[in-house]
Image 1 (cartoon, helix red, strand yellow):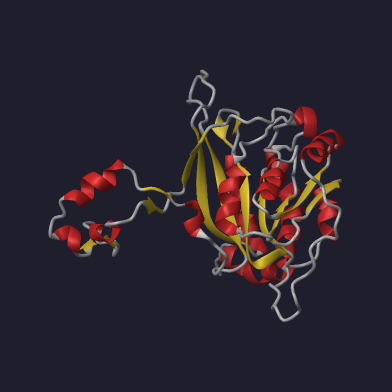
Image 2 (spheres, helix red, strand yellow; image 1 turned 180 degrees about the vertical axis):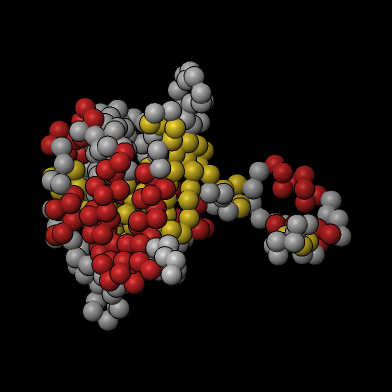
Length: 305
């Protein structure tokens, strides 16, 4: 096994990302400050300004991600003047214009979210994890996140009907079907896109730290050992700590010295060069600005004659 590298960088990711080579990281997993959140530590970004604030960062992420890599963005809308703000929806549309493919959306169900009372809504118990890619074909190791079949399999497969032994078409005509007999002898199944994880974490030194199980699941799904994982909003280093434990190389960027120092104390830092660019034989993805120009007409409304 190759030596695993963990590179921690103090600074603003808008500038520090420019030092990373094109097509050099396999997974970007991050949770940037939400709009108007973490104002005591990060100053906060106004909801109306959020998209314009994030796009210069995402254009650098598009450049440094390998063609077969994945970008996972943990984010959540906030309530402004009694209604949900649309900055996340707007950001998704702008990222697509920038050249990203919005491949999937995962939901993190917070099993132990704090109770509360609001006049016109219930407590937030979930967050988005948006998956973006450069290409429709990307690295994905689904077998690494399989889950136990559960008791239903023993009950359901014990007495199979004739329908269970053949492909049973969807009753609504969707074209999808199932064959229950395919699951005989299997002890694991593929998970859904809803992750049921508690919010508890051992690391309480950051204003908005997520549990280690969250980045762990995505690191296992989208990378293999010795791949490169990037978190441009590192915080106190949860993603980098998990990546190191799973034998992945990691790069973390943090703007606040106090959190950067916490991460350095908790992660075995190996000061090695940053990952190199892929060999020139790999065809680069179109520059984001060119993609934006090519796609612009697609999203602009047609003006009447």
